[in-house]
Image (cartoon, rainbow, N blue to C red; front, top):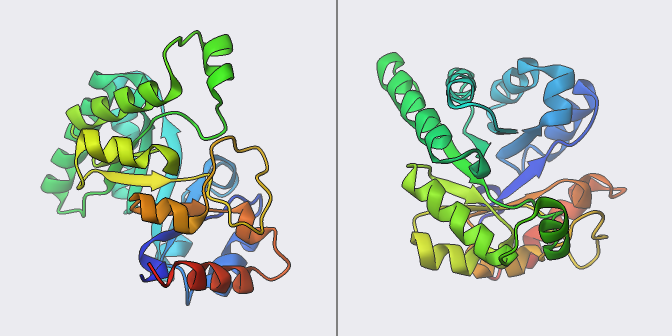
Length: 239
């Protein structure tokens, strides 16, 4: 299994120059990098441009969640930036997701743009069953909620979802094998869990059927990030 087709490295850092340094260090191993809220708020579209200059693909992880018109416009803006993939919160509802998807498709056809993959965020991997029930008032199981939001994302025409690797098998069974699963909260056996509640190792997540795995701190917090990536590559090479 080729690492650069499966591993997305999260640039969860607070400096543009440091993010570019990471990309340059890992560039021979990694093809897709995730730009999240912290880095995009600091650097804006310039980080997307820098990644594209280096021939890298961008997963824009801003988790759009607003009224349908606003999310659709944000999705169009992301498409015009040429990102490979972006996400929206599935809990924003069917109309929000569908409007975003439809307007992005229309703009890409009219302007001859490559259509980004649009994926729905189900339940954050930091969320536990107890917190979901006690704080959000959702009384059914966490797995049921993930399955429901994945089904809504499919109905809206999205390409897949962000979900814990622990839910991959159920989502694929419900939405089909071609429905993408992007799995965050991935931790090798040698890395701390940090603030994640529902984690898996890279090998476990890919074996369960995840199409992409997202890793940030587990790599970037190591004294030698390149060595960490090489360890992960060896771990999944036998799959």
